Amino acid sequence: MGAARTTVQRAIDPLRRPAFRWYFAARLTSVVGAATAPLALAFAVLDLTDDPGALGAVLASATLPMLGFLLVGGVLADRLPRTALMQVAHVVQGAAQATAATLVVTGRAEVWHLAALGAVGGTATAAALPALRSVVPQLVPRAQLQEANLLLSVTRGAVAVAGPSLAALLVVTTGPGWALAVDAVAALLAAALLTRVPLPAVVHDRAAARGVRGVLGELAAGRRELAHLRWFWTVVGVFAVLNAVQALTWTTLGPPLALRTVGERGWGLALSALALGLLLGAVALLGVRLRRPLLVGMLAIAVTGLPILALGADPRVVPLVATAFLAGVGVEVYTLGWHLALQENVPEQLLSRAYSWDQLGSYAAIPAGQLLAGPLASTFGVRPTIVAGGVLYVVLALAVLGSREVRTLQRAPADPAPDPTPDDPAPGVTLPAAPGTTAAPAS
Image (cartoon, rainbow, N blue to C red; front, side, top):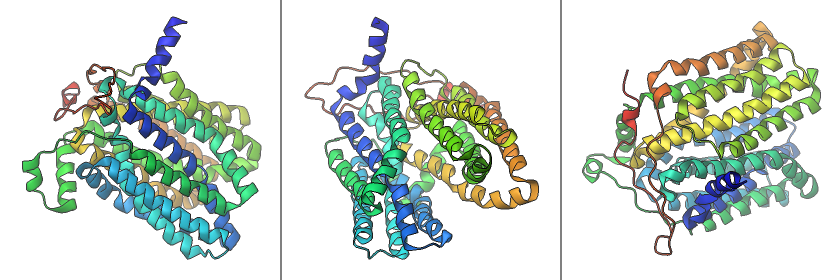
């Protein structure tokens, strides 16, 4: 009992720090609001037109600007105060969603309105995403990074479990316009909460900064300074392919195959099991310290190929639900390992740019996977294509462990975590120039 209490106390220690507590509240508010947006937007577009390409165009209008500006967002988050950048991004997102909600509720919305506002929101998202994770090491000492990341993951997992049902209830009872308004209010409230998050300044090399001209110059300089982190580029490159495979198999070919085999109920159970695995995986990790975050993470993410294989080889409800749950746990283990690897081993003044490269690699190849799904399924058949994708997913995830840098990267030594005091409302740590890079010597 005492050990369990100690684990719980350690898990919530980051919330004792006022700066992280306000940041946590802002993230939770934003995530809850954003859970309503996809379904609300889909119904809003479908109310306007029966054209199946219209929804795709609206979604792409948000995705493409986000991809285009992610790297710029990383530079801005390393150059400007990260809290201020997140505040501005949330205000812009909230204003765009409020405008869309007003147009939908008043019956004046057109598809191009929603596409244009989606582009505004996507651009703001690109500015905020790199800062959202790179700010965490400034809010808690290194000794509490795992617990801080897991607290954020638990809230995401809980929203992933309950969010779709709540969003559907909101859309059905009030209409898509009011559901979009909820997202708008949540974004603006998150911006207000972020005003309570003061941050210590990020230390920059001023001499180097004077030699760099403009955003593109800083982006290139960051790329050169990150070049020696082979583990980083190895994982980012492989995940570009893994996410394309998942988009091709699970996201694009999966739903129609599931409807013909396990049915809507079976597919819904699999998606719920995946979300539940995310949540319970985060909870289980609260009492575990990952000493080799990438080794454990890549072994765990390989499990994500199992539900793809189960769907393609022999689609039945029980194996599909069981493997989807394991995949959710695996995704959570990998996610924690990856964030710890970045936050403890990338210099703080480069961390946002590192996250921007990571997110660009994660998203950029997804459209290719979606576009290849149809031709591959027509040529080889739906189930053989899904099975081949599942095999490729598992093999690629495990092949990354052939890199010595990935296998041997260890946690950086933990700094002591003193109790917060009234004179220290936003304790943070300043990372050394390249912490932990010697833990993974070049092979």
